[in-house]
Image (cartoon, rainbow, N blue to C red; front, top):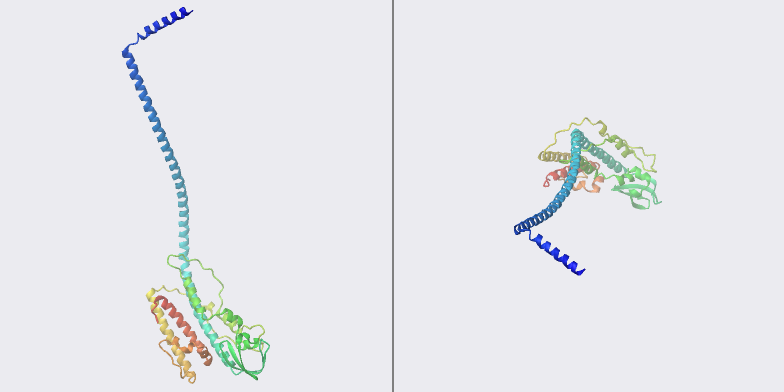
Amino acid sequence: MNRACILTCQTAAALLLTVTGCVKKSEYDALQVENQALQNRVDQTSQQLAESKADVAALQSQVQKLTALESELQKSRQALVQAQKEVADLGERLKKAGETQPEVLAMQQTLKKSQQDYKILLSHYDQFLSERRGAMVGRKYPTLSLEGGQVLQQAQVESIIGDDILIKHADGQVTVPLAKASPELRWDVCYDLQERKGLNREAIPRRSVEKIATLAPAPGSLVKPISSSPSVSSSSLSSSMLTSKTPGSSPSMPPVPASPAPSFNSLPPVVVPPQPRRSGLAEELTAQLAAQRAALNAEYQALAAKNVAALRKVQWNTAQPESNALLSTMSGSRAVLGISRLQMYRNAIYDTLQQLRDLSPAAR
């Protein structure tokens, strides 16, 4: 068995040597070159595959950016549509504002006219109040009850200064605030508690001027339509101010008829003038101020002619009559009937001066 195996191995080795000896060296070299070429191609292909993967990653990043850009474009398109709607709405509002502008100007003129009428009405009321309280001086009451329960015998009104009344009675004198007087006495001197709480005459003209300023549209702003409200006539206001009674008032005192005043409801149609320039408005206010001062001087001269004794020592400044001390003291308006009318002119001058100083701070 061992001899047969050895013989077989020797035969196989001989055949292998025979086959090996049949391959030529030149063919072997060619196979080696071809193998090397194939290996180079494999390496190039691997490198190209890696580069392709990098390109794919870059393309994926660009796709993500394009997707985000598309989303932004969608939002911009929606914003553009909304902006177009707002532009259309703004154009409609501008159109309505152009139609409403004449109405606003007309209401401004009506408000100015109403303010002037109200000043005249207040002057009538102040004059009536001053004359009424002046006539009360010297009035006698057999018995006069005060709210605190005190009863004055043989009472006589000595003077009314501001909101206090000086009463002489059988046991002496007493100064009583009108707010604490009896309802009968308050009615006689035309003192209304509700009026004192809710009415501030000095601030009413200024609030009217501020209201006119709020109606004027600011540059570049849109004019909003103004809803109409029922107006109150000056005649009804006058009657309510002069004939209203406080609770517990005496029925024996008849209401005093109000002085005639122009009615707001009977105003003529308002013709809106062209808006003056700033310099033109200052000149107009200056002329108005001079006319108001001249009117105040004329009113004072007429009043001084009627009250020579009382106003003999008064130093009157004709250049700036509104600054006279006579118009600023509480006692002056009680000493001479008609001072309240001069104070009305003074308040109108102050309003004009305020408007003029808004345009020119150096105005005097």
